[in-house]
Length: 152
Length: 106
Figure 1 (spheres, each protein chain N blue to C red):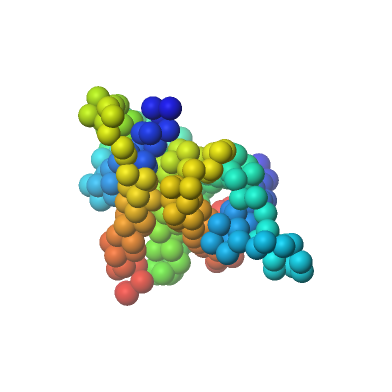
Figure 2: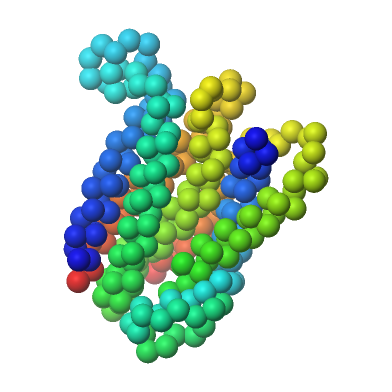
């Protein structure tokens, strides 16, 4: 069951990565015409991703919280025994970044809701960028930790 | 509408509260994964490691909600700067990199 939840957590994280990456690139580097791969990637309406990002963030977060105890008992104990401090510290950073991201979600939803207020353009860029960073960092760290020592 | 106006305050209060709560281990509850038991506030480990992260989230959400509620009468007819909503979490993230630096310099 834990392995199933871990894979589901990873799949939700992939969907979240796609959505937040599209939105962040569209906010910071908008494209007027969807010609070719890179401009097409950026030429999305970022606001349309907002609800999906909020829901995916919460689902991924909850799944991560459910599989956290087995990691604490097996994974982290192993990392400490093997003195893999940087991997252990990366996971510590991941949990703090994502917790702060969770607290920022109401504000993120507020600045990205329709209709878009021009005075909140910087806030939209920054909230997306912070979630983008937190989610990518969490995804890569989770992968590395799972490769070093699975939760089983 | 008021909820939307309070969102930058909640975001900033949550981030600040989380840093303080995590650093001082002011968990609202503790989970003991080995024996699958929960306890109120910060409890020492019982037959295996204790988990405080869930409690830190609970404490931070509680503090941020209280701060947001208290700020309602103070904010009447006053604009809430949106920069609070992202700059404070950004500073807190950078602060965590500093606070956890020992992991990377052993």
